[in-house]
Length: 363
Image (tube, rainbow, N blue to C red; front, side, top):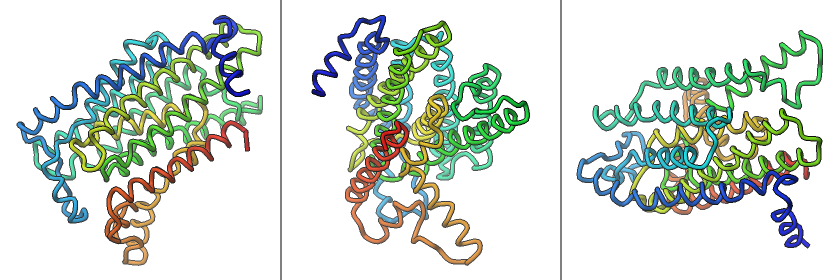
């Protein structure tokens, strides 16, 4: 029954089923991004080893991390390059959502680049000062959100129920606030979680798969309506998000080949900040900001563990965890790194499935 439905779905006339037109692009973007990473990374590792572009380990990190001091970093540049190249090759940059996502990738990637550069060249494990990192993250997020607001995209939200000016203003303020927190919060959450070999990549893949399916479902919803120019534009936006999600999935899978335990290459902040910020932005474009709290639940747990640790130390003058973020807590409890990573992947998958089912109104 399921096979027959999928077969009918894929073979429908391309004019009645807009999704059928983007299947080749989805496959092409996925294959392009994964092949770029797999083909370039070995030479990248060799070159950066010769240049001694190694990860700088913080002194407060678990002692088991000291052996990672000779692992090359900056691998996020490969992730960023492969995603952007795939987007430019297979996506329509005339579509506004594509331009927003490109801006997010480049702006957050630039912040990460500066952070990594300071760590490597200045031999400073702290990198870019936290206040400046947060300032530029906020600037990039607000810049995109202001453009979204000016273009009227916030008025398309299903949360907007009232026609009164006062209620609309309140809605816009709440929407802007939630959207800002989704982008900046997810950028920091992915960055914080990127502390063990391969830990952050599978949860990123799971979230991107969920968002890709959400985009497809939104496309299909419009096939049962009378299509106007405005609705065709929305379909185009969601189609491009699907293509971009698969380029991100391909890039992450390719990088995981080299980043899984024991890692031969680290992504650095250039990768984690850009991936996190872009995931947050896609959740805004799909109106899934609140659903992201569950779909990306493992990221939420990681960043909340850091917040709780800071407050607990400030008010009670002692640690809540042996070390934050929480994956380091389990390391200090003598759990092996691969075991922690695998269990976090399982939790991430569970969160993504649960959050997706709620978002799709299945449960």
